[in-house]
Length: 195
Image (tube, rainbow, N blue to C red):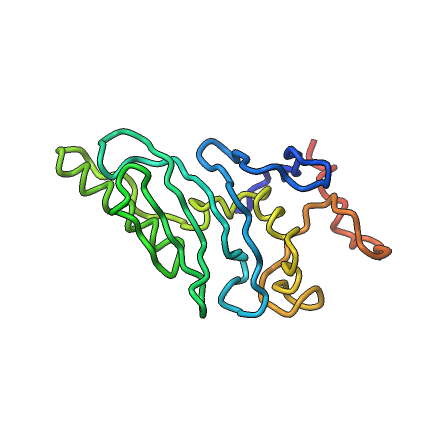
């Protein structure tokens, strides 16, 4: 079923220009280092759920590939692969185990496979291997989604009429409308019911 968790709005620290101060920690394991730049000229740099800004960087805390049961901050990047984005993950304690691939889930699965081969070599059970790469990249957090939507050119990636891409724009309910807003649809008043 759908989650009924209330949507968190963005109350992140901002500078005098109203821009979010980076780095910022989101959740327990992700730190956003750079939001990067949206490429709206190539459909491969977004899909219906995510926009992949070039130069996006975050740190994700996860088990080490070399020291069993130790967690380290992996450096995750979205790079410009020309035709499509490249996803690069660098383990801080084992740089030769860096992974580069064409999907966020693919590179994270490769890291997890390395963690698991270390664990099984020490007689421990494997940890999980199914992974949402976008989640591990921090891109599934509402705050991060919102910050990326606020980047220049992001709107062009949205489905029409907002843009001409395939990204489903997320409305957080408290944005300042850019033009006079039409009357809200009847279902917009939900949330008052239920106790």
